[in-house]
Image (cartoon, rainbow, N blue to C red):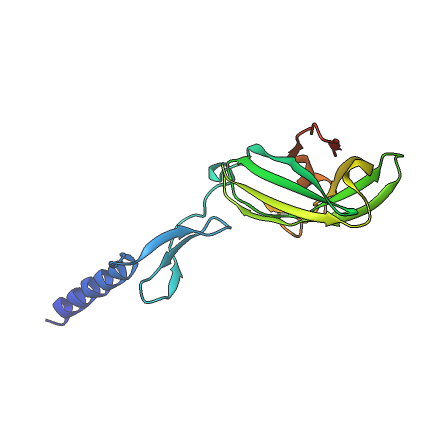
Length: 183
């Protein structure tokens, strides 16, 4: 009788353990950034699921490029308003990139620089930003150069990636008919 009780208790314990890993309605499974499986429960708690984390070759690799265009240049009195668009032609979200735009006079002298943040651009989408360069008319601008953007969050690159130029390598600057526009 004692042996039958122990067997029944063991089976019940195994069933309870197995059931604890089963998903209840409203629960769902996700994969964490480190590749481990996580069960998000309907009661707003979570737990790691048993098993091996995803292998490096199973993780999606970043492909494609972002395309940056100079969409418009318009005079605003003695100032020039520049409008830029970044299109995400990659397979992953561009969470954040902050390039610097350097405006040069027609004489070749750097006039001023500004940074613009482009963020939360899903694959296939685009985002427009604009900035005003004060004290210089649009016809006085001979070149707009794109630099910086080193602390981006896109693909495996994150804000702690300190390699200069790596983020901007993933951005193609489309030439403009308005003014010389390049990296």
